[in-house]
Amino acid sequence: MDNSGKKIAVVTGAGSGIGRSVAVALAAAGWSLALAGRRPEPLRATAEAAGAAAAEAVGEAAGQAVGAAEVLCVPADVSSPDDVAALYAAVRERFGRLDLLFNNAGTFGPGGVPVEDLGYEDWRQVVDVNLTGAFLCAQGAFRLMKEQDPQGGRIINNGSISAHVPRPNSIAYTATKHAVTGLTKSLSLDGRRYRIACGQIDIGNAATDMTERMQSGILQANGQLAVEPVMDAGDVARTVVHMAGLPLEANVQFATVMATAMPYIGRG
Image (cartoon, rainbow, N blue to C red; front, top):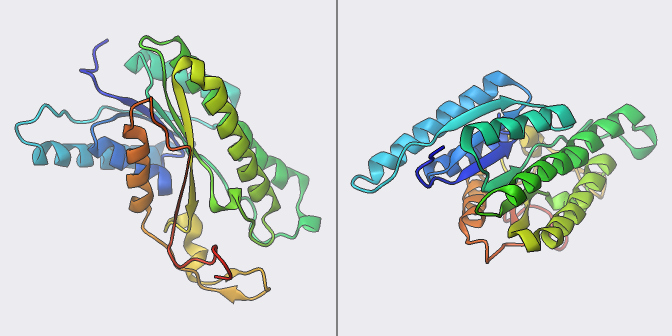
């Protein structure tokens, strides 16, 4: 199996938002991709956008040894062990190795629900996707990176500003994103002997469908609603591409990329 020296990346939650932006940016940078998400149609749309970005990059790099990205779409629910196993089996069969996992799939869960009213099933869904799903995908990547030759690779977990500070009425999302930080640290430690680097990107107010409510008013700690600034998701994607492009001897352990004026530092 010959990929002409191309780097191979898995992007979860690739059908929209940050996942789509990162997939497109990686394709433009010459990566081949396995795109994972629950719905086939959005994955295909991301694949088309990634292919167009790769083709444009090839055109801009006339005369250089650059080829269009190869893109594999794998519908998968990251909270399902069987789906995740099938994802990595497809990656192994198609590409033979893995250089990067962008561990991105996640859900906010029901918004604005006070802790005392949050249903068990709602709590469980957020934990299943944001924490168990992140673990299962990282475990699958770790196994493949450990076994392949040459050994090693990189995992980038999508944390959140909520891995540092909560919003009101966000206990499930905040708890899981704090847990992702522990996942990142453990993977970093356990991966050292296998040349597996693990870092985390904590994102604040990137403009996606999931954060649309930021621009219409969102609950603040003082009980008031306020419109919050957002940034382009492409700014996140460029940061992930930078992290992914480092040699395995270097690692961005934690990076925070946020809308400059969002209420995070100080009193907002």
